[in-house]
Length: 201
Image 1 (cartoon, helix red, strand yellow):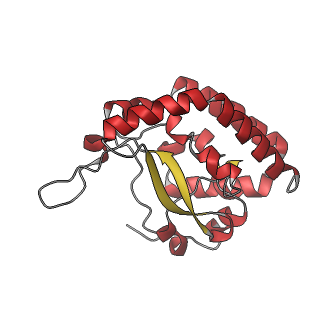
Image 2 (image 1 turned 180 degrees about the horizontal axis):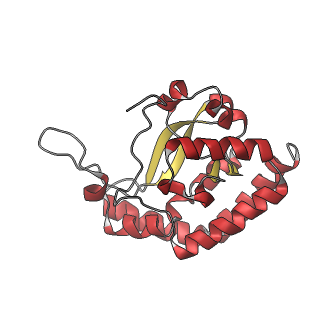
């Protein structure tokens, strides 16, 4: 599995990127116009063993700020095109480039923020024993509707159960959920509330 998975990731990511290249090009142009600038969002994320890399996503929100210079809420900054891209999960397409670079896998725990690294328990930190993925076990079992603790438990469960059969199950379930647009938002927020540690009130 450890030898086969990287080769399979690269091959499938390359094929997928070629197949979706027309869609990739159209979305890039639309978002560049909608955002009045870059169509891409690049952010530092921890990968396998906590090593930092730069994740690439389509930029679905503008950089609008209030009078005090603070970013407006996700909902206020989300563009019309960005909303469509998010609802259809097309904002994840550029991460195929991360897979080609060997920084990510197609399937694995989602890469979160670097500042969370010091907040994980020893058990939760095991999610970094494998490469992060575009989709994962937690995403097909609730995605944003899960608590952070439950999400981390499922991430570690994936690491323990790692197998081609589980990956195949996640792929097919992900496709089903994307088609039905399940689990994208929670409580009308565009993203989950930040993780503040296991002892946070």
